[in-house]
Structure formats: C-alpha cells, structure tokens
Amino acid sequence: MIVANWKCNGSKKMIQDWLRQYMDTFISSTGTYVGIAPPYMYVEHFLNLINEYGLDIKLGVQDVDKSSGARTSAISIDMIQDMDCKFTILGHSEKRVIFNESNENISKKLDIAIDKVDAIYCIGESAEENNKNQTKDILENQLSIIKGKIIPSSFSIAYEPVWAIGTGNTPTPEDINDIHKFIKDVVQSSTENNIVPTVLYGGSVNEANAESFFKQNYIDGALIGGASLEGKSFANIVNIFNGKNL
Ligand code: 13P
Image (cartoon, rainbow, N blue to C red; front, side, top):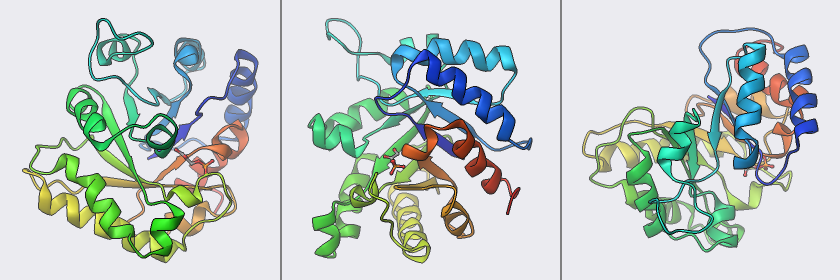
C-alpha cells in the first residue's frame, strides 16, 4: 500500500504535470493499493483525470470531521463517499500539532469513518519523546483509541515519527521494523477482533531509501509527503514497492 499525502500543496497545473510524469514512469503491476490524498479542493478534478486516463489510483482525503450540520469549514464522511473517495487519513501529526487535534477527537472521527472508507490512522513520537526513549509509551497511548473495538481489515496505521517528517532524517529500517512489529502486537492484543493491521511507514521516504524500508517484514508500505509531489518520484516508489526497478 503506497499513499501520497499532498498536504496543502497542489494546483490544476501541478495535477496535470504529475499525471503525465506518473504515466511515463509507472510500470504496470496489479494488486497494490495506490492512493492519493490531495487537498479537498482538487479531489474531483483529480478523480476525473484518473478516470479519463484509466489509472488504478484511489482518491482519498487528509481528514474528515466527526459530524455534519452547523460546523463551518468541516467536511463530512457522507460528502467524502459522495465524491468517490475511498480512504481518509486521520490523526496526522500536523493536525495534532498545528490544529490541536486530540486523541479524543480523532477517536470520534475514526468511529464515524472506519466502516465507511479505508481509515489510515497516523501515530508517531516527537523528537523529544524519542530522545527520552518514550516512543513505545507514546504509541501505546495513541493506539488506545482503538482499544476494545471491532476494527475492519481495511484499517491501517501509518507510523510517522514527527522528527522524520520533511527532515530527511529517518530511523533505521531495522528500528522501524521493530516498531511496526510492536504496533501490530498492540493492536492485535487490544482490539475486540484481534486484528493485525497493515502498518505503513511515513517520514522522508524517497526513491533512494524506499527499497531499504520495503525489504523489512513488517513494513507494509509507505505514506509519502514531499516525494509524492512529483509524479515521477511517486511512481518510482510504487515501482520499487512492486519489485520493479530494484
Ligand atoms: P514527508 O514524506 O515529506 O517526510 O512527509 C511524510 C508525511 O507526513 C506523510 O503523511
């Protein structure tokens, strides 16, 4: 599973250039879940072009609100489904830090979204927490919102250490693999239906380092920010995941 998170980037021109590069670079392969989450404004435009070009890329969003109605600026899960979006990212660290998103609020959003679209729940520790060796405690706390719940197999987790996002720094592939195993164990033991989730890694993934991550047993894919903004580099990462270009 390879997902692009465009954050607050994009324009109609950029989408056109991106798709041209993607189509020139992508080596066909079946089965991999490839998703892109542009800003809400561009979902329909992107989806129309993807359908026109016959590409196997799912459209998704970067967040969803917990209900509809008198909630100025919000986007509801029904709207997302209405616009043919297949997934939503939830709990991204930029939402947690810049927009003061709490575990409690994310939990409500997750409850609404989880049976309607594929939910990708982001978790990760800050640099300070990492330095104090608190990573597993922080992750366990963030994972507590799914404790005791029945979680569908479409649910996945993105492990995104905050200090690795947009910095060019990453944990070693082996360290990420250990953390992913830990995440899978925590989710399996704490959910009602003992689900073992897909776990993606996010944080400075690019064409040069992707292979080292994808070789690890417990790294099931990637959530990609900066390197997803160019169709060529994103397609190359998908190719690497698919065992092409290795
Ligand atoms: P970068 O790939 O730019 O580090 O961003 C990762 C991310 O935040 C994806 O959600």
